[in-house]
Length: 129
Image (cartoon, rainbow, N blue to C red; front, side, top):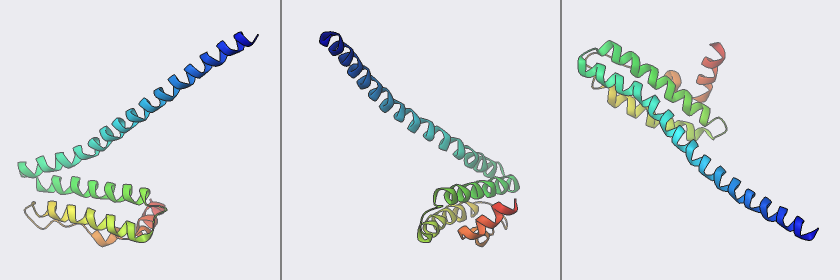
């Protein structure tokens, strides 16, 4: 009886070890999926750059504006429980990135950055939508 129980426990232990490593490998797959999803977000950014190079500034501006709103919303979602300082610090980085890119467009293109500068303003827009 003890031999049978020992064999079952050894098999169970081996299966637990295999399950542990399968789970570990799966977390790496999730990281890869996340990277691919983030690259997908950047594809719109690349399209806007191509439109800028092609001289379609209105279309490029429209895409940049959508990307900006998407980035701000993503940051808003990720900093829901964070302190206000973290939101404003991340927001400032996003604004700097888009101001630099909008300078490449010929003409008077600007995003109303103050419209999105606090979490409270974003929350109001979400609830109105």
